[in-house]
Amino acid sequence: MSRFVLDASVVLTWCFPDENAALAQHVADRFMQGDTALAPSFWPHEVLNALLAGEKRKRISGALAQSFLDDLAALPVVLEQFPAGVVFDRIQSLSRKHDLTAYDAAYLDLALDSGLPLATLDDDLIRACKKVGVALVQR
Image (cartoon, rainbow, N blue to C red):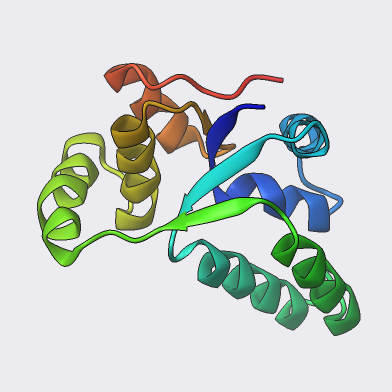
């Protein structure tokens, strides 16, 4: 059993069939093998927001979104809380240094702090990981 940091971009490919799914399938396989993931405490909000936006754009139905959320709730994802001081200091610094959103910088910070690899499909976040030496979950 191993652990990794999980970005919302990966799990959202499970719901949106027109997205690149190779890494997402690999991550799903890891969960089936007993692996667990860490994510920032805002992860469920980020996933939910993307699903609601998908509904508005008629990419998915409300029923599919709810079924997907039910499945996600069962995943072994541990949510990590960031104190305000960490957000305003370390995460702000990473965001500015690597031109990342505060949300993506939080994933990077969690991977750095935990020493775990990061599963992401976000190109800017992948680039930042390579710069700071964070391992990426590879398919």
